[in-house]
Amino acid sequence: LIMDHALELFAKNGIKNTSIQQITDSCGMSKGAFYLSFTSKGELVISLIDRFMIQYISDIDYLVNNLDKEELLSEFLTYTFTFFQEHHNFAQVFLKEQAHQVNEELILKVKAYDRKFNESLYVLVNKLYENKRTNEKHELVYIIKALIEMYRIFSFQSENKLDLTLFVQSLMDKILVIAQYSTVSFVTEDLLIQLEVDGDSIDVDILSNLIDKTIEEVEDNIVIESLQILKQQLTEESMSLAIVRGLLHNIQSHQACKEVTYYYRKYVDELL
Image 1: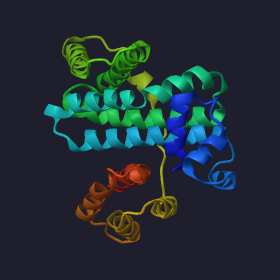
Image 2 (image 1 turned 30 degrees about the horizontal axis):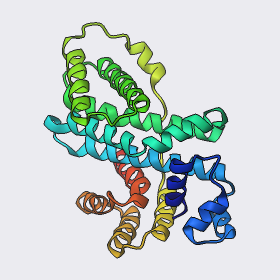
Image 3 (image 1 turned 180 degrees about the horizontal axis):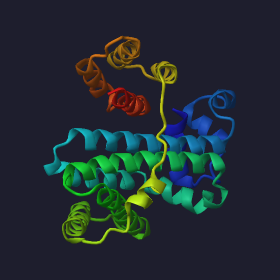
Image 4 (image 1 turned 90 degrees about the vertical axis):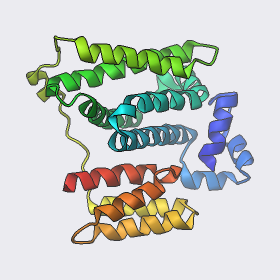
């Protein structure tokens, strides 16, 4: 509730011009209730960015692991650009007002999510170009990221709403040309070793606590029951993949469950 109302106020009035009192008034709660969740407005801003990143990474991870390759690139780019547009106002305010105040915690979070984004992009590239060498696939990951960043800058600088269809077609055209006709790869096998990062491993206790925390934020009974069964599955000697995948599908679209969905899927992948 606090984050939803704060996001609306930040996008409308700016972060500096929005007080904690204005946020709590909008929520219909006291300042004390605010401080039960956040120690400061700065922590609230970081929590908002954290929520955006886990939502994007979780949804991208779901797309690349579940869509057929014929529609994968188009759907990935469409979702990416749509996500940029939805959060355009807040992003502009944040970059304008907070860029010089970025702290170490946020930098670490961004780096961690960037690693996860690379992992999801590699799944996408591996599906589309399975016959390419490993280093060529990794290079395509960075090329796709660079093209997305270039178009993201265009969207931030433009006063008018950009053409989503044209955006997707343009990016697909360039990615397909590079993937098909490039013959030289900057990313060598030696460089790949340097680029390797140790993925965040997650154990049963951490995931179980994350599920408990998420259950407290959810009101939908079906989602709560799905989370409870997922927690129970963690202690089963032989986890039923059919059950797990069905339950993850049940909670995927729920905002509060994005983090659980992402980490649970990664946990299952590590076991396999």
